[in-house]
Length: 272
Ligand SMILES: [Zn+2]
Image 1 (tube, helix red, strand yellow):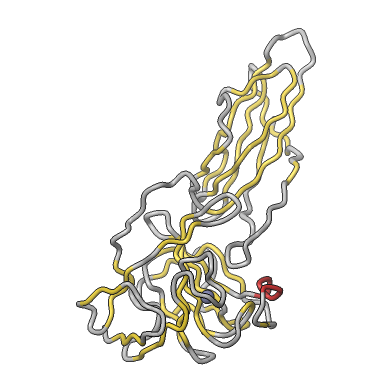
Image 2: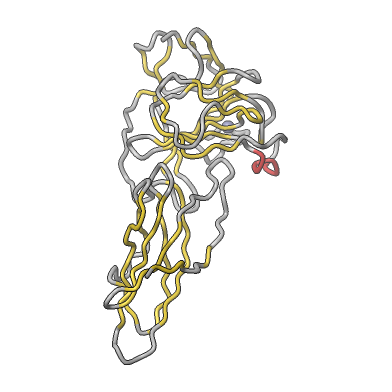
């Protein structure tokens, strides 16, 4: 018999450029020796979970393991079996968890991948803020491409859309407006993500679960959230439990035969 287990959700400090919370849930199922804790992950990428068990007269078969990675679109994934330490005593268990999109144990990714510039063929954009830029990227390897409102943003790499937020209408040039960012987040085959941020209100051209190809138009640029004007904030990152690790990326420029590590203040042309 399956029973829904009431879990204590530990609310996280959410980085606004990041995600909404994954829709993972848990089910407990009685077993011969105790109870199994299973996870359902309806998301289109793995979800990492930190489980903290509180056990009375029970032991977890997973020992002290705390981090579990539940594969994408998977139901009844066994997290741990909690076994009775002895038959004759009262046993109890409870747990709390934190979760985030992606595999937070990932250490390696495709560092040499050649990204497409995230705008349309035949156009150019100035990179007005680069990695660790002084306006808002002090702690981020993120790139800001100047783009007028309503410009087509195209996928820089194949992937699957895992988050879309496009309901915000406000913006301002300070952190109080982080919560108003609209964005599309895409998950890649090597476990990285890209966040395409500050898109227009209702400016997404994709929905969660859509597979996107390099060059597909995925959103319209805007100036939602923490920004002083219309641009695309592009951040590639490895996921963490409560924060992400942004990484540098290389882009094909001009006719696509040259690859560049983009520099703040430079204007880049895309003709491929
Ligand atoms: Zn930015």
